[in-house]
Length: 530
Image (tube, rainbow, N blue to C red; front, side, top):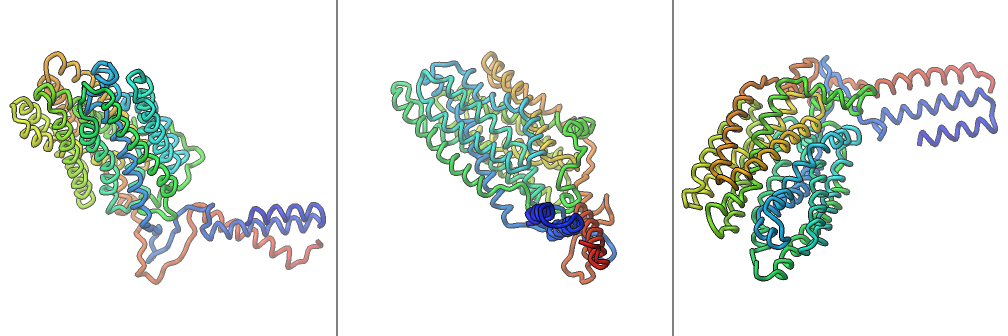
């Protein structure tokens, strides 16, 4: 309205009225614009500042819509993770159908890791510059496009097309894996942020679990009937594409950049808009200079990279020790991930309750090492039910570490962008995942699963040492508790002596409102000739 009002003022004054009225009306148009800003219109997204009992406070609010945003994101993240593992868990079926070797099917999983490393920097830049909504829609849209392209690749001579489709899905993953921390921080309050992050990660884990379970059921090994194999693969691909399409439509309708009011003091004190001198390169440089974060990068990369390697090569390890157990291999993978989902939720709840980030991270890391050692030395004992138990122990701690790493990274790097810190963590996880998967795959082929698992165990032990060296400074938590800014206190509706004060751009809007109102009133009172 104010924009159109200004245009009308200019046109009227240019064609009909004297110059003084032009000035007079323009001043009042500025007044109108700033009144709209102070009303909290779409131009203004800064939190309102209050004076509560003589202390500053920033207004925060939680919206029910946060649960819808979290749910939709978790679901399309689930589908993307399902597409990551759907080839590797039935490697023997796809090698026979497409007439390729095991390592080429392994690369359909590894491509997720390879694509992530170079693309994470433009993806996090886009998240910082254009916001959560565009990044989320790119992830969901590319995931949908890759799923539909796979539907056209169900022919033995179209392996190249299915590779292309998987590459598209791997690019979609770049716009997905870095969002849990961002969604949790921007939409959820300080007492639920870690749980929200765990739930966002949970969707990806659940997708991996379903990826372990469904493909062996939907596409059983039928080497003597190529047409039946093609039909089963087609059913799996078309089902995935249909679900991806529905979730893309829901993402369009539900996901927004942020709520109208921030959910926590840590978000409230951050500028809603990037400063003019903001440099994404400088943000990366600040993170690299943070010694605690560098140690977390390496230790996180080691443990999650080991999880990626175990997940990718699980079918080969099980088939090496237990013949004709494709279905149980999928069930063991399901056990691995479902146990990790439980671990993620419990770790998130524990963090929200205690805020003991380093201690919890170190304990879970150590128990992941113990689980890996137990899994290594019980795999070939000719008792597949024991493998179910040991895989569950391994998954509970190894997968449960995912949200811990994200949230710990956000805490020690605040106020840097959550998307940038979690993006770098994922990038290192992908790098280590590529190295571990290729190396462990060679060791399994040449020496058996024992050698490959011992290789991972040594690296995880190194990660324990690096985690112990991390200096824990909970910067975001300190801001929420008012430690760093003691004049910041949560807003309480019980106080009656609240004075409303403008903040940030609201303060500038108030100044312009006062100045222009005074000048315009002065012109009117003294009745300058018009």
